[in-house]
Image 1 (cartoon, rainbow, N blue to C red):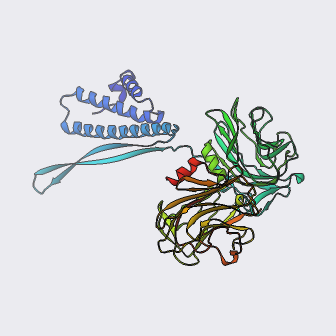
Image 2 (image 1 turned 180 degrees about the horizontal axis):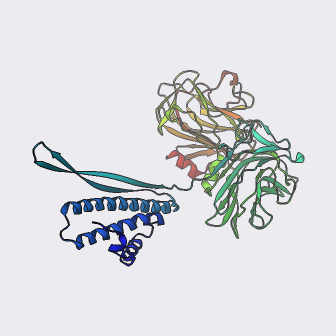
Image 3 (image 1 turned 180 degrees about the vertical axis):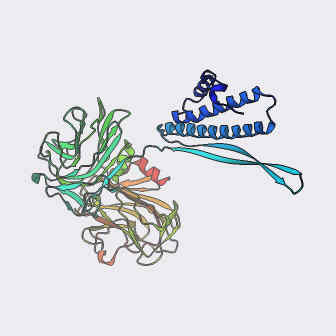
Length: 568
């Protein structure tokens, strides 16, 4: 007979078992401890039962052993499962940068059940059958912790007839009549138009955390009036103390990148009524501010501290200093393609953003612009074929052409430019052909010249305009062979022609007389409406062959630039 707890053992006998268990498993909770105490009590009770009587029948003992094993197994499984869960909860608070880990624990519980069946026949014989069934169940606890690298933060306002961020996170509200002008710098869509005399600006109320991080702000801006002492393109201010306000502005006709009393000042005098590309970069690791104007480094300044404002609205075209009823230092002019990224862009990236007007790889028959402005093109009568790099476009029917526009920089007098492409003229074609026709309209007219083409004897011609044609004549184009050609212009070097990475010639310095319009390029032909345009030494007409890797720049390429393009 099994008797009560007090008759078999004392609390002092149980305590060592409790202490040992709690030391081994410190995560066991109070609720779990009640079950464990029962298991300990039962084990001690069972041992005392066996020790007290050597005459105890085997069946009760066996039954006790089995039942004890069952209870212990279930209790331990519960303890282990809850222990793992507790550890899992602790692990979920640990944040890593780029790791994904999965921990899986399997707990197997074996339950043995003994069934005794007694059958009695009409005779006095009794048969007892004992059946033992073992059931194994497995429970699995999986803990998966997934953490990822902190993604780059990105904001982009195209200002194409709205104030929205491309990702609809930092959408703005036009204040006091802020509106748009068409086209924008890209030659399509629109740009933000702010009249500072009316206190117009854009309010972005959603706070953007830029504290203790690298960052880059870029924008195309066109100032109409710079009479204010400060002319804000973008601002954010928590309080007027060191490193608590950010200003991207023109101060007294110079670029200014300020964290308030922690500032970088440019050197170039900014003029009105022309487009500029401005880039403001902060390298948090180096604690350094940078200003770039049209891709050229203007200022480098080591800061005493990073930007530290933890609240405040972004204002485009003004600054709202803390405590002021309305913003101040309003911008008068256009702003387009404003972009933010939470890293410090390199000088080469900034130069590309500022001066690569378009890049058409023509891979897979695509006319998509891979440059920053996304001036996508169209094609008529073209097909895709093997190129010098991947695929090219094939001109093999009369009237075939590629066209893209509009390019603001090509329409600016005195503005440097470069055009780069690979050409492979068909063996069966006759002499001459238009490679690149530039015009003030999509039909090839208004202001219009053949900027790059072939003479009647297939000599390569690069040309520009200064109230008359200024041309450089190069070698005869080899038929059926890929040839790399660059024509460029700058006020210092005039028009230049490069073939396969080699400078063929330069003109005398002159000022490029442009259309004052966003220009279009037509590749491979000259439209009938444009036959009266200025063609110089180019024998205009249909080009037959292949063209690949077309790039348009708003700067003069250097010899190393040209060499790299000629040797991809």
